[in-house]
Amino acid sequence: MGARQKLYDHIKLNGPKLYCGEELRAMGEISDWARALRQLRQDEVIVYEVVNNNYHVTTINRYSATTSRAGLSSKDKYRIRNRDGHRCQSCGRGVNDHVKLHVDHKVPLECGGDHSDDLDSATMTMVFQQSSGYQ
Image 1 (cartoon, rainbow, N blue to C red):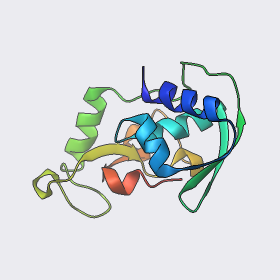
Image 2: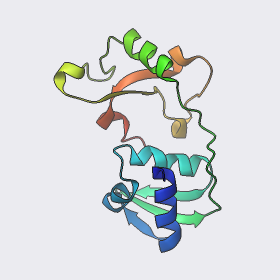
Image 3: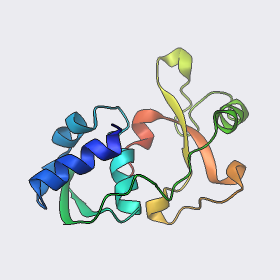
Image 4: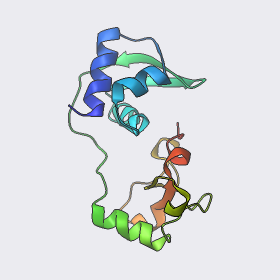
């Protein structure tokens, strides 16, 4: 069972309420739990607002295993990381600095970012912790 399903099951079981980030992090069981939660919101499976690093869930709809967000292929991720010199485009740190890098949108989708076919202009390499704070 994936993180999206685990998060949904936990929220469905406990109903609409205020959830702390630590509780949801434990349920997601992956380092990228916040992304799975945002995908649930983007797919209109749940509706929530972020309040002081807590998640106020107001609506729980039917779960769907499909998501409107298509993931990048490994080849595209490597090409973008290589283009960026395997360094975070925000702070300049790289793998030799013992940080986890990943590819993310320059402007988060939740803030009006574009999920277009032009990956070069829409994405960049970032340190995981810096990127996962988008809300």
